[in-house]
Image 1: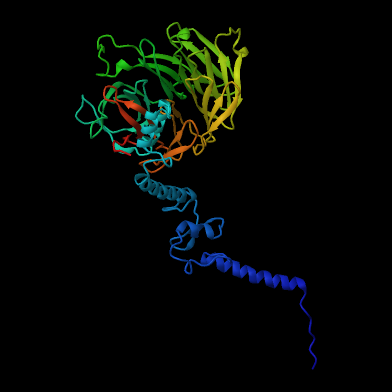
Image 2 (image 1 turned 60 degrees about the horizontal axis):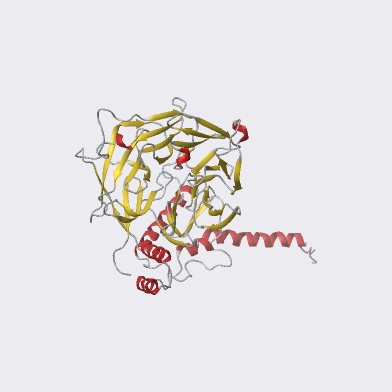
Length: 497
């Protein structure tokens, strides 16, 4: 009997081959391996978990755990007792990396530059082949690379027990003898302190806290700077963010309000806090130019305010965007402003104007994101600018050209400062990833990356102050770091290199 045989078409073969490939693809996903990558059981023991996790394919909605060698379903971040979310996974990975970096930072090399040692530098300096400024910067570079962390004890001479509060930020005065500290209370209020740094030279570093128990506020502190109203660094200029029930304001807080800090403190006639109500103040800057004495600037929403603290004479300049960063020049009557739009421009205060809309702009340039910090150098032809895309650039204001780009900084939305130390040849900044980075200011080379002593989080970004003469009479060089409820001092190593 003859059987009818009908050959299969090409479409049927393609469908059958596709089903075979789909089955093999499904099995690879279940075993956690791809078709061209060996399974974890056959891999060598020297391969790390990060290599295994990068070799397996990524499945949308699932997370591959290299330790358990399987996929887990990502759950939403609500209505679950122990949800597995992308945020939690990233936080766990960041914590593992932070602990590894802390261990590596303890065992790091003392010299950050190949062939750099103190004896060779001293010999070159004695022979005259190395300028004294270069020698000083190279020594600071070596000492920064081997700073050792010590925890600082805070004492209050007026109370037996001191309540430990969370640090919002710290701000040092010009001689780096005092720190203005903003503490965050659990009930939503802020508390202000001044810390005396005379005890940092001890084996167990200590600082004295001089608080003002009468001064609390429920408003968020946006920014602050030291002000020289009737003496160098006699006041602190603070910008408060407004609320529906409390409008924003800018305050000049006398340093002598903090007890036992100033020798001429008078309990009978204490100085009055100077307040001016300003809505939406994002930045502030104090002018040290004697031709514009006792004046400061505030960056507002689409405008700049310049005000004299004694005569209350004020000038308003309209802008096209919110002003987030400001700094006065000391050699000329220029005010540099950084906007939310990324624009940086200067206002010449010598030029008279008739209305707020006709302010005369000087130098104008832009960066790719919102400006967070401006730092004018001693040579006022150069300006350091940082923005919310993580870029830190050094600009030549004469050519309006970027000279250096300090790479590695992490920022996407936070208002983070940049610290420039020209004498030491260093530039420092804390990123949104809670890492403190130190660059060589001249060649923009990254010298050191310091991980945070605490787990990284949005509300635990460290605040730092660097100086080569902390403490005044007995100077102690190094880095001060405030994070969470702790204060740390990264002091220079006294050992020979």
